[in-house]
Length: 171
Image (cartoon, rainbow, N blue to C red; front, side):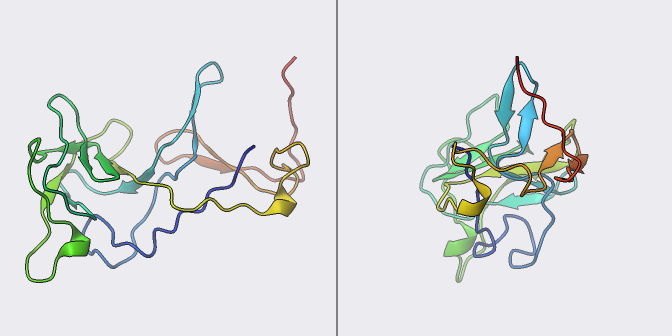
């Protein structure tokens, strides 16, 4: 069954400065990616930021996971991807939520990414919400009641008008 996901990110600080201010999101959890032959869904949110922007962890850990040869850092349930100048494997991290008298630990910088300057945050899904009136009895989303947004790479999105939607079925 397809479920519409609602991620409540407004209750957490953002992992870039200003922590408590609103920031843009260029891709969301569940965006369609890949190809028809190899479909996949986006596994987090993309936050646009310039190359070299400081990135901080939301939570703390005594031992961060930052494997050599990769461009991510994992702190607890959160992955921060597309980073350069990362902390080292096993480093201690003070997260934004745990700072009172000390500043948070910078875990890396936004890298120059081929699809546009941004970084990816993947966290634990804490709530799945869907409206029952949008789901058909077969368990699929009723395409006549939603305006899906399709991702076409970089910052290109298209919203479909349900009134003019043509559905092609596989044979």
